[in-house]
Every structure is written in structure tokens, then in C-alpha cells.
Image 1: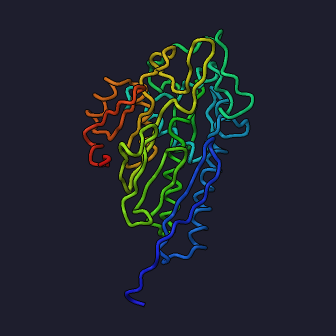
Image 2 (image 1 turned 135 degrees about the vertical axis):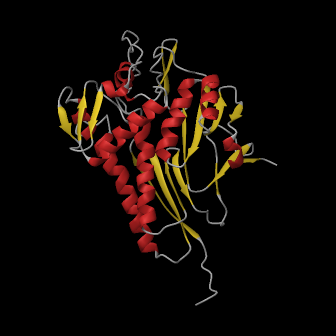
Image 3 (image 1 turned 90 degrees about the horizontal axis):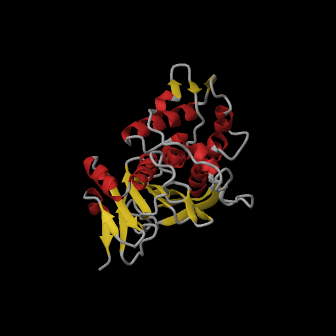
Length: 319
């Protein structure tokens, strides 16, 4: 009937995958059946389960684990692996080498060779050296042949720095294929946000570490990702460790920021950029973000907030 308006409601699912809590929230106006929406959510959920099987470095049966055992051999890979590795190379080059998949050895040496939530996680040994700085091109150790979908590795890699954001983008695409126009896919703070909320307003998103009564973000049709040390950090003796390792100075664990939050068209880009800017530090990170017109919010360890010029249009300040 013309003129009839449907009441908006939220249909949600929460689950654990890829080492984090994931939630998918869809705003329904009644034009698409609940059954169809739940079918779409199931398809999006399957993306995360599939990508955990492909990219987990904690699973011996993952495709990444098998690839890392094939050093010096040309290896056939899945289309998903090929695409993610192409993104890794692209982000490595764009970030002046701060985005670095080859830091897997350093992660293992500081004890991050198991899931952080695992009862076996012990924080590593003080006796193990970390890693010499990496200052050569990623292509020197990672050769991609897209035509026959093969990879030639000279050194082990870890795709954690981008693959969660990439999975969010793929899950969002599945929801869009079902003609869903208003939703959030959230994988531990890496989010893709589409359309409006159940009040027909732009989605309002809290920034990790910043009180909601101080500021929030408003956005739609965008990805957002946060990198920080509040969730994954530990001590060995007097030394503080966390999972964000600077490839240019691996022994120096940056304690300058609590979080760095980036907005971008794709969550994968936001994911990689948030880590890049965190590792660059305040001065270089701010210059890099302004030069490249990145929407970023820096939260330092004293609670001070620094905004790039472009992100200001997405900021809601408390009144």
C-alpha cells in the first residue's frame, strides 16, 4: 500500500572469528524479509570463518602456514591469498616501508606466537634478539605472479596487519549483494559502515579510548580502523612489549599513542594506515597524514587528541 511506512528495527549477530569479537548489525525497514536478512548475515559470517582458515598464523592447517613452509618454492595460492598479498605490497610501498608483513619473526621472538587469549601465551623471552631493521623492498622477498596465481617467498610473512580489514570489506560486499543498504560490520574495531542507523541518522561511532561525551564520529559508506596497545601488551621484567613492531627500529616499542583511528573508503586501507601512522610516531605520522590527505585521529598516552584536517568533518563534539 502506498504511504505505508515500515518501522525500523535492528537485526544483529555476534560471534568470534579471526581472533576477535565480530558483530554484524543490519537495519531493517521491512522491505526485505527477516529470513533474507539472516541469510545475508550468514553469508557475511562465512567470510570471516573462511578467512581464518586461509590467513591464521596460529593454525598449522591454514593456507598462510603452508605458504610459510614453502620458502624458496613457487607455490600456487588461492585468489584470496593473492589479492591480500598484492595489497600488502601496495601498502608497504605507499607507507615508506612502515607497513611490513615480514615482522613475523620478531612477533614470535617476543612471545606472540600463540593467540593472545591462549592459556599458553607467556610473553616471550628476554634472551631472544628481535630483528634487524628491514629497509629493503618487500618485493625482494615476496614475488607475485598474478597470471598463474603463484607466490615465491624468500622470507616468512604475516598478513595480520591488513586481512581483518579486508575481511570486513568482503563481508560488507556480501550484505550489499542482498540489497542491504544500512548496516555495520565490526571486527574488533575494524568496521565498515553503510547507510543510516535505526533512527535514520548517520551512524555515530565512539573512538576507542576517547569518552563519548567528549567526541564521536559520524560516518556512512566508509571503513574505519583503530590500532593501539590497550588490548595486546605485556611485560617481561621491566620491558614493555606490544604487538605493533616498527620494522625500522624493532627494539623500540612505541609508547607514544594509546590509539590511532583512520577513516577510509575501504576498511583494509584504514587497517593498514592506522598501523602505519602508529609506528611513524606523532610528528612523522601527522606530516604523512596531511600530505596524503588521510582522515585520522591520534590519541596520545596523556589523553590528548590530534585531528587531521580532513577528519574534522566527521567529528561530533559534545555540546
